[in-house]
Length: 116
Image 1 (cartoon, rainbow, N blue to C red):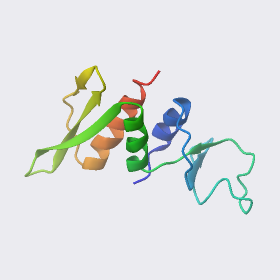
Image 2: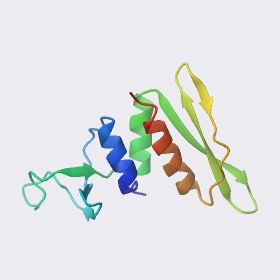
Image 3: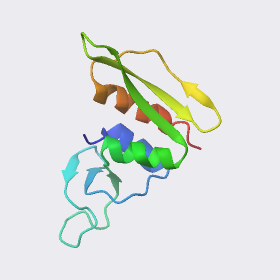
Image 4: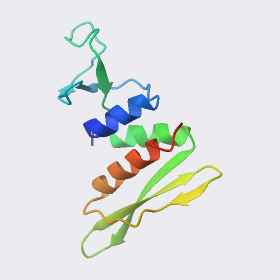
């Protein structure tokens, strides 16, 4: 699943610099394809890289920040997330989300805010 525009914007502000095939333009419009190819209209335009949740989660791990969604109710399928940081313990906001992806997305945003 591709991260939301707000998450993509925050990730880039925090230094996310991994190649992606998808982007958001400055208005938040999702654009599928390789923005750095000579065959696209995006060359030279300001864009936000749009990684998948998994790609961003991996990048955060390289920064010592771990986001872990957890199933909290097997009947409803609700989830929450925890953030683990190297040397600083864990954070668990206690909020419940309807899906794994919603919990992960919010966890990614909160984890990005921890990066200086």
